[in-house]
Length: 259
Image (tube, rainbow, N blue to C red; front, side):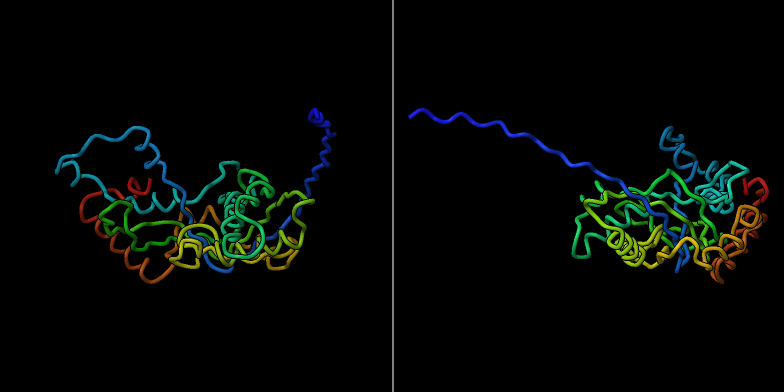
């Protein structure tokens, strides 16, 4: 008996509908800015020549004020409501990481079906100068001191886009809320296991607390605090004062050192 010929079936593809919601992000812990410095990026493109002993002695190992000012993502647009900006992709990555720890969607599904719009978004809040001990990457894990901006009382508003036939609004909000607890944003966040900095909660964009932080932490205030930094804590205040004294003692120009 001759085999039956396969019957062609009509392929039917349903319409994929993208839905979007605007969400308020209210920081519950300070956010440590971790943008790679301009100097580091330049040296990755064109590594500097090795310095001899005399050249090392004549060069600041840490340009503290410049490191502070280079650490946040900033907008040069004078019409932007803030000087400091957040990357929307932080929140998408956080949702993907949170999916690893909770029952429901996989990290891969989140990556395909959820998108946080824009390359950057205004980040409201008050930047402070933060110095802390760290260890360099590499086998030796050499101790070091890093200087970064840490933003307190921060907030932003993001637009989350997703495929409505795959995930519903309550699930998106629950996942984003979980990311605020389990992942966070910036350095020393919960996702890395070393701290809880950058934690946040999800609120309505019209929440009074968002409005208060927008009013208190806009561009003019941020610009002033980046030009005239305030130490974040006692340890930073001590280290910054010591650095200022050493810069003067060794004959460096502080204004030049500040960049």
